[in-house]
Image (cartoon, rainbow, N blue to C red; front, side, top):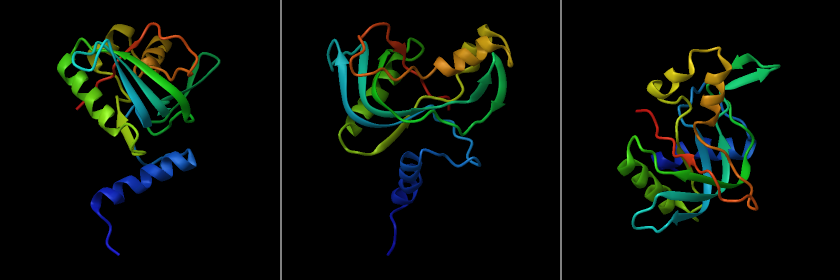
Length: 167
């Protein structure tokens, strides 16, 4: 049996979601992996300013922090999967790209396919204002860059800025 190249790439991703682990040898630049159930645009799909992305998500966890100090840095670690929604506002650094990313995520909704977006490391220009590692302000900025998974009953308030991937 011959596998399609895309199947070869999706198999490790599926194992990642099922096992809750990620190969330590892989330095993963992606900030969010998820299986999307639905996407809701606000105020409308024609010209959205905000988006709700519902499903199950694993967010990058770059730093291990204990007692206010960085104990480890791992460019392949993720928080455990959480069901809920991500709530984003358009990224002012590139509004057209943000809306295109949202459309791409909407096209994957309900398919059961794993998708990745965001970035493990925020753009240098955005991180510079927080200082340098090991400053905890930098750690907090990196950990917040991709937003957070909100629970289904949580109010829709204060959307996170959509994280654009560094290329």
